[in-house]
Amino acid sequence: MLEGKRITVIIPAYNEEKRILNVLSKIPEFVDEIIVVDDGSGDNTYGVAGEYSKTDSRVKAFRLEKNCGKGCAMREGVNHASGDVIVFMDADGQHRPEEIVKLVEPIVNDGADFVIGARKFEVQGKRPLHRRLSNIITTRLIRLKLRQYVYDTQSGFRAIRREFVPEIESDRYEVETEVLIKAAKAGARIKEVPVSMIYGVETGHFRLEDVFRFLWALLKF
Image (cartoon, rainbow, N blue to C red):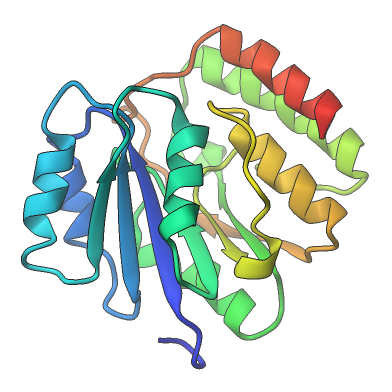
């Protein structure tokens, strides 16, 4: 624990049987609870996570019967989480588990309520063009909505004080936008910290329809 705070890490996963073990094995010891939610994978993601839980009692694996989307998996994870601070991270190895502490410390030290792992793209290398363009557009629109500057609004690597984790309504990738907007409206103090980012390993489940879902989320929330 950190300053008496219980830390939960939630990992939504879809077809990540080859990568999830590497992520789980690197979760720092100060993390109290690790929740893996298999979003109806067609592979053995759930089995791998479940088997690993036999060697690490912090790990709990859950499975959605059919693929529903990242938002669904995050919602399921929150329903099972017991932590005072909730950390979200991806299962594909893009995020470095050893950097979880950078997200959690500002919250346990009462310097923030919502900490985003900001990806410094110019340092970490080039991203795919479609991801670069979509991120530019969505980020600028969200800044206008929030009326504050947030460098990386779409990062899935983030930590949130439990009382600022909203009821999640979104099913897919627009969930990042929903959670950020709702937390900001609730008065959460938002902070960003630089984190490493490994592109070229992402599984690419983002689809064109997700752009329209984002616009819907921007208007609704």
